Length: 444
Image (cartoon, rainbow, N blue to C red; front, side):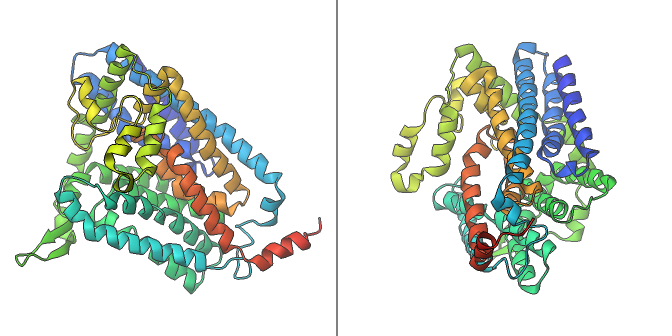
């Protein structure tokens, strides 16, 4: 049990250090530590207490998790310092600072408007086909492509909120509300914990990066506790929301009422979180043990599999062709049965398994690279880089999936998000202002 105690103290130390650091609550290590303490650590204790303690089964997972979190923190520090230095040395970054230079003379809104309309249309299409898709057993087909594109809403929300906090205006407010509306179905109807946390983070991080004003730490602590309680009762909330079919066969929105919400036992949900479930940790422990005993190392195959799964559309190239591209042990589907262990539906294998499957304990270096790129974006955002700010704010919560779902989640998604953020900001900068910067640099 000493490994679990050490890991708990390690994550607690990170959480407290960044909580009391000025603006530390918008930095990725704080979010990672909070998530691990509220999700991963309780499952470790539950898994260890619900069976005869097998150190050979759980200790490798805990040790690898500790190495990965340490590597993530180290990569973050290197990346943050690199981002600050690179941005300070770049003339293009010094010439435009989103904290002071955003105005109608420097920013045009049509690219943001196009992105907002595009995401709204995609969101409507997703809602129209989602129910029938789920009834067939799960999200497959065109909806997976649409859901992938719908995730761009976080980029639009981050940019519109930065603009509104910098130079509020009615057109910007309309775009901001439009981007917020894209989150309405997933938060109110589907009660997706990821989207709840994402909207909260976008608001808090944008406020800090633009205004450089602190939210009281007590409020941050209370809000974090509130989100933990809410997330613990997700299953109960989902029972009273979503879509329902009338007696005439029509589908209508099922909105939760105050009486329905009042009947939810939030404290019981919180208690269950800390006493009754350890599915993800259990999955990871058994799978990592199986991979280690059989030396089934993929040597980068899991990263390749994530890229294939994300960017190769089976609808167009054929599912058989797509399946033939996967390398090594396929951790996302049928080959889980090779472990002779039954995974519970809907549970993940944590984000530590894929990197371990590729490189054993050296896989922790994957998190070093992940932390570096996240930290570099944050460092550049601190110096006024608008692209870096939009990218960091819009992808940080997604980056948590590297710990909860797949080691390579962020590394696979980041290039796509960065390209969209760069194009959005590039076309939003007025050419007249760009020419003025180049032809008549400010005097020192």
